[in-house]
Image 1 (cartoon, rainbow, N blue to C red):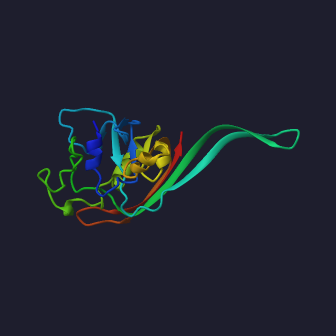
Image 2 (image 1 turned 180 degrees about the horizontal axis):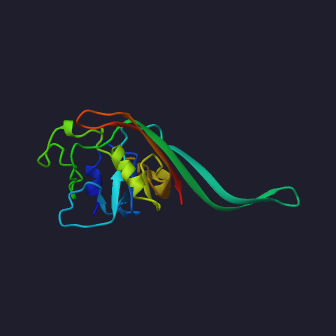
Image 3 (image 1 turned 30 degrees about the vertical axis):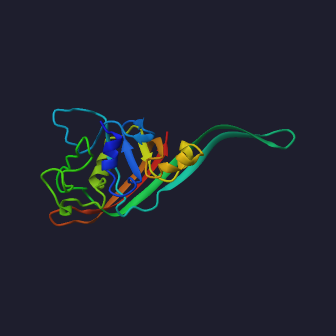
Length: 216
């Protein structure tokens, strides 16, 4: 199962990738949102599970657009003032990738269940060398995104990493969560489009992908 140590191992830089898609809402470990289950492509020798997650790549990703829909019932009173009954706030997300490699690794990355490292990371596994990793941060390539879309007709959980420290409070410790996932939202895929921009030689293709998500 994923742990906070595992997620630290999946950080290529100081902060994790901006989005992670998960079958479960995960857990809170030491104040950090951590997905449950296993990353797609993990080394699951003698282990079976239906709970997976994928780490989305920031490779050639456009801005993540977040829009909020306020669900409420408004009614103007007899004296002319407006009164509102607030139901909920729901968000929608859209983003796209240009020239995203169709696969993240040359072969199955066999992510280590403890460290989160792939078999292509230096110092772990029998395969080494950045020439075997195609996305800049080891995040999901085009086929991994398409596979998730094709196999998730129901909602799933979206982990977001951006500066939203008010989810943790309004004191100084709340501001120390910048390098973590700050929000977890259950969402549907509302739209998924891709185009094959270039077909590669013996390694991978380059895709353009656009995705839109709606909160349940």
